[in-house]
Length: 80
Length: 521
Image 1 (cartoon, chains in turn purple, blue):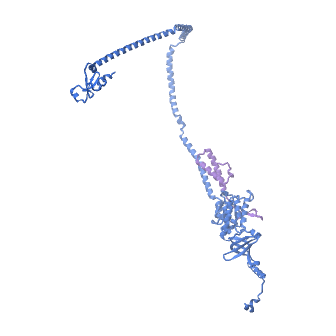
Image 2: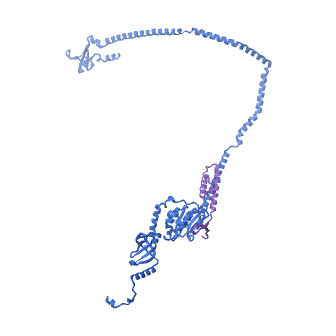
Image 3: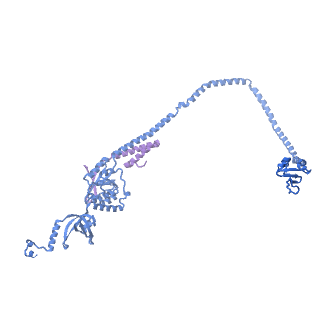
């Protein structure tokens, strides 16, 4: 288990660790106390991954440019 | 000829031109008519003068056209003219009256045809490859799930639509479009600027910095796609810190940017697929993980519960542990009072018996007698002990005084003398015995000799030998090959008398009987 707080993890990191946690638990050779800790960690990771997946939202913008071609901001793009 | 002079033709009143005039007229005509032309041909000889102007020939199989590129234009030319190149030259026709020539003043030269373009592309590719820009080690890993995707493409058209659709299907993300021209002269500089611009965005700034770039364009002719073959685009893509997917043209089109991008997608749609995973798949995978997590955790507990139950079952009940002991206790407890009673009554009877003769006065008297006896004995104990000790010491001294070594050695001397006498006697006796036996032996020998036939020979008898055997009969003598007569002093062959050679043999050897006896000694 890494020490990175779950909230700071990328989806990929969290998913990888979740897989590891499940693997360990399934192997069944973890002491009971440790397995409870593992389970809690797993649940936290799962919630984090889920949040990342649920947060998937489309937002399309186009870069707007000034006279010199440098970007000045964005405008929403609709209807594509 | 004279006819012609004498007989003027109607053309005679046509105006006369000077050479310069007609040259000027031709010049005006040509320049007016061909002010802007595109001419396709192969480049012949190409010469760059020290002045910077470039003179060249455009030709095909039947004709040649001279051309010139003035210095200023030559510097701006995107393609360096080379002999043998198939080109389309754009410019205007003009004449050079001094030499009765016409020529084209070229504004632009572009490679004509796929072959020419491809040859140029190959050249660029080789140069960039030599620089190491295509090195696989330069390729960056695409992020698994980018938060913001930057797309460099035309804001209109099917390409951005395809990308957005596919992203929407798989995993809706925040998308930033950097609008660019995707063909024409503006294409390459704009695309390069867009890639650089995205890279220049600061993380956390007002415009979010994408963590993945897609450079996309739909299908088209090689000329349409040419902007993506330009070096500035390739260099910008190679320098991009943000992972970049190139998706230019159709699957079969390969442009220079594809070699330097981190991933090449065959189509814009495919680029979207490379960019993000499928959200539903991830959700279901996550669900599956969750299920496995719960199951595994549940099993960890359930397994232990089961084990506990098993062990608990195997544990004997507390009652059974004490049952036997309790029963024993009951049994013995039951017997205890009666046993106690019987023991007490038995002892009481005994006590009664013993106590009958037991009185304190008696006991005291007995005690007194014993004490007196003990005191008397005790008083005698010490003098007696000392006396006994003295006596024993005296006896010991007495014995020790009578103990002398001479007494011990005398018997030893006596025994030695006895032994010598005995030894002497033994040797006497042995010697006598030996003499006796010697005499006996001599007597027996004398007897043996007197009994032997040799003694008889001394008295005048003789023995006849035939073939080594004693002959005792006439018949035996007749059969023998040779006869010998033995006298007391030797043997003589028969019939030879004293003349014959003595063939005497030692008498002791001849008679077997004599041998037998002799071996005894």
